[in-house]
Image (cartoon, rainbow, N blue to C red; front, side):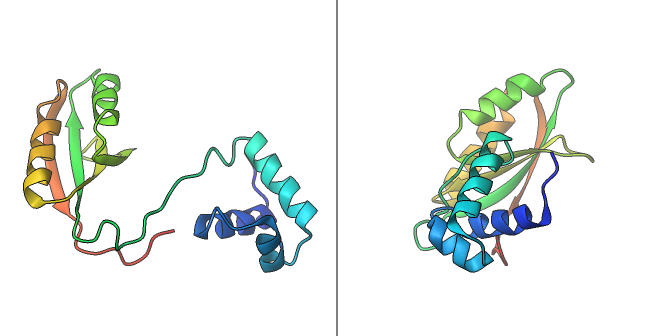
Length: 143
């Protein structure tokens, strides 16, 4: 899919606040409301925009522990491991990556003890060979 420079600007504004009104987005981009609405509809139709999500305020999960959990998967076990991880609500994001690990999961729990339980649960999934975790200390920015 080819995304124009104007569409990239629109997507940038939507990443900041997907609930912004079309009128507000149009003002920020110096475009007409009709143009913005039709661009959004086209991007949705083309599958460029595949959905919208909720981004919580830091205060909501203040004190929660977040960790990147690197996972090595045994051969031919990726689909089953992915299904098992998708079923864990504490796993917020799952990336397939190159390098020494096959997957990186972002886990979020209220306490360190619960993060310990989560990493143990992930390690016990049939097809998971090993895990390594890194606790997130702070987020410098997020888009």
